[in-house]
Amino acid sequence: MQIDVFTLLPEVITPYLQASIMQRAIQRKLIAIQVHNIRDWTTDRHHVCDDMPYGGGGGMVMKPEPIFAAVEAVLGAPPACPLILLTPQGRLFTQAVAQELASLPRFALLAGRYEGIDERVHQHLVSDEISIGDYVLTGGELPALVIIDAVARLLPGVLGDPDGAWDDSHASGLLEYPHYTRPPEFRGWRVPEVLLSGDHGRIARWRREQSLLRTWQRRPDLLAKAELSEMDRKFLSRLQAGEIPTAPEDER
Image 1 (cartoon, rainbow, N blue to C red):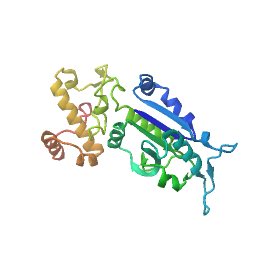
Image 2 (cartoon, one colour):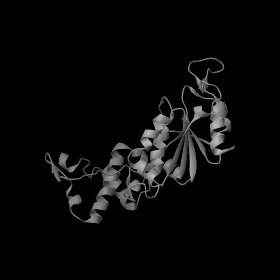
Image 3 (cartoon, rainbow, N blue to C red):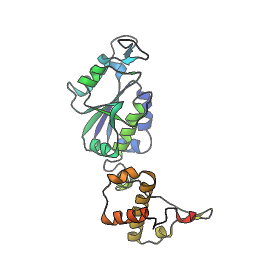
Image 4 (cartoon, one colour):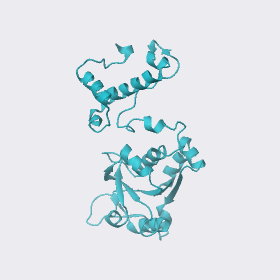
């Protein structure tokens, strides 16, 4: 897979790509990420990429010329792959969207800055718009990194555990079950006995029930969309009826 990022601040993007899982994925050629500085396609000596908005108002607006020039120089005209603008006005980024993007051979991200981007970029250049949440940031660089990270970890070989990405919160439509490691007892708090049993069937069922419990407690809205088995539904019915304790063993 290849991801292209168009930004005014490549120095914000690059360090994250040079660390940990992302660095290893790039070194192993599991993913290729190219960061392009939009200022390189300006034609004035000051590399100006913004101007005052027509009609007045506060803030500055990113100019269309360098954005079009950068994208068309790298991706062609029209762009040869999806070009996604990171904007609070876009569709909400979810795990399902990450999976959608992970199925593509190539896509590009456009990180905005200032008050916004000239509307002609929205109308005639980008093919999609994505928001990572209902809040406002100073630029699209952090959203770009969020999307890159979420997509990359879905690619085969990027994570050490081949099933790791599918066990995470939201990957199955539910929140993830609790995790424990050594020591088996810390300050009087013990690891649940089932995890020490060696019975993989019991462990798998415990994890599923804990995932259901945590989702029911913290994000019940997700249950309406999750794929639930008949056993899952019976467990949730017992939860709602108060038949199952909802506190961890060491708190009861």
